[in-house]
Image (tube, rainbow, N blue to C red):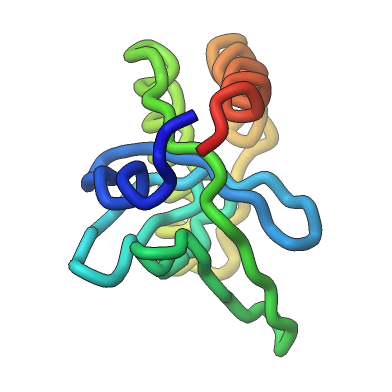
Amino acid sequence: MPDRANALKNIAVGDIFHAEASNGASLLCLTMSVTEKTIQARNVATQIIYDFDRATGHADWYVYGTRYDCMIDSVAPLPSDIHQIMLGLDRKHREVEYRQAENPDWTPLPEQLHFTKDEIRGLLFVDKFYETNPI
């Protein structure tokens, strides 16, 4: 198991890592920016942006007045093909966010929301991968 402090310090823009919320939610995060004190990352599925403390790996966020917290629990690098699948999922979900922001009446077609076989393969992989590669 890698040293937690070093693992957090080594996170770079473009890295994908896993965090777990206090309610048990699994958060697959894409690193957007890194400063001396903060790792800013976007949830691949929900597009929620978190500001993780770079020293502790902890983040708080608020939804409808409710505070949630989460902790980075794995930074293991994904195999290249899985990493690319997760980047594709991020783009897919971000596109939905952009379209809805531009036109609140826009609704994605059901086939736009279904996972492809590769996306299912990638999600099943990361589910087990991060669990078996904690920091």
